[in-house]
Length: 307
Image (tube, rainbow, N blue to C red; front, side, top):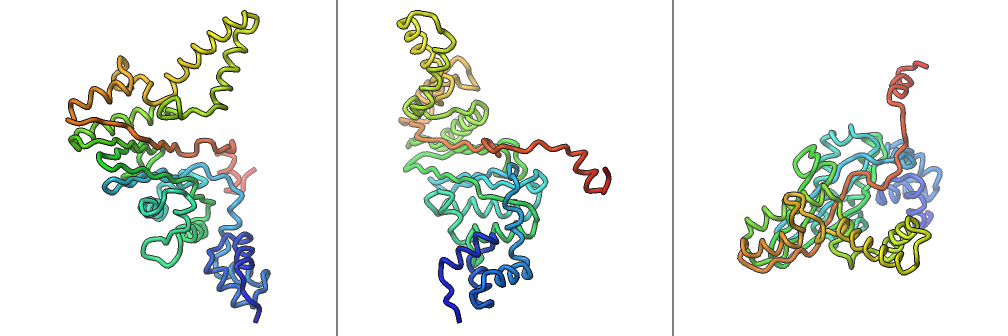
């Protein structure tokens, strides 16, 4: 009998999208013959996912989950928004978010972790779901926040079910102050983040590439002016840019007369202790994915056999 090596299993998995244990079983049953193993998986309905892998998946759900001083956010994509209403898909997203709480928060760790109540991994469970529902799906990203004291507030915009929607936000507030008041403040800031989409917590979180690009745009607008004037304009423009895109400098969406940092400072008196916003996560469904423009009426007509 041929040796079923890890490389052989990986090759079959790459070709079919089936789970690792299913690939191993298929190779065992077919004495290591890749082509025969593919047929074996197809007969079992386990290779369907591979046929979907090339399709654009930009819909789906963003979910948040919290437990004590930990919280996680994940994004699971599908091809159509119909899948977001599928109870099986929603259940998978919910359980995957819970799994994220017990990992380091990276999408790789979540995919490799055991799916609750089953012997397969989260990634393998998703592959099986693809075969069942019939759309390409991806566990796109995951993140985790923690605090030693305080709260991690959350907000879901466009919720389909509790904790799952089109935008998910987490906000970590480190403080020994009143938890209820911290939670209220945290939710307000989470709503602010959902609305204004800051790029970073403060200026130190903005990449040099982003700053250089903004500066180049400013200089381009003021070509022909003396170099020293251009430099002053660029310096002033970058400061304005930071106020627009960094969370602590942004005007608070609930009170435009104050910055978020000012709101936090004032809140210390209300919560009864020093307060620091240590991090945030904002996932918007499908952001950054190039979506295909489709003619929905034409698709329906084609499905009905019309020209």
